[in-house]
Image 1 (spheres, one colour):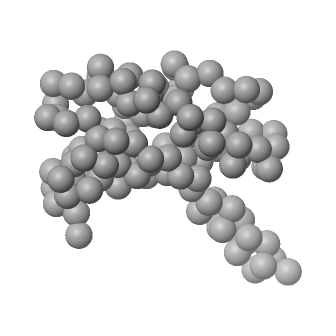
Image 2 (cartoon, one colour; image 1 turned 120 degrees about the vertical axis):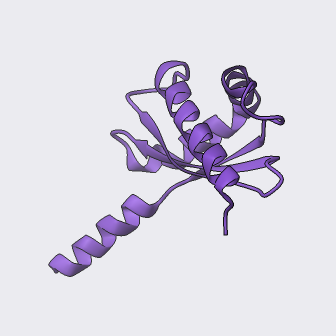
Image 3 (cartoon, helix red, strand yellow; image 1 turned 90 degrees about the horizontal axis):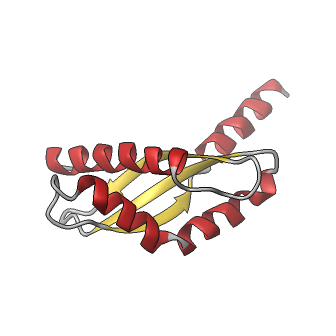
Length: 113
């Protein structure tokens, strides 16, 4: 169970990363990246960031997440510039694909048939 501090840091990181992806990160093609969830460890040193990728090609989602993982150092630096006065340690970031929307769509299709 997360403490209130972990929840606040998670929400802060989610908000700031969302703005970073919206304004500063340029990806190939017409792709939109949304930060759906952030889990922070109890010592605030690691953050698991779940990304939802919207774009014309569903197969390119994994490639986009790999591309984002390759830019982790730059993204962490940008995040640190934004939240350095609010946290002691900027957490190490790990990005994962959030497949909950695909799961919901699959269940919806099963219910329709």
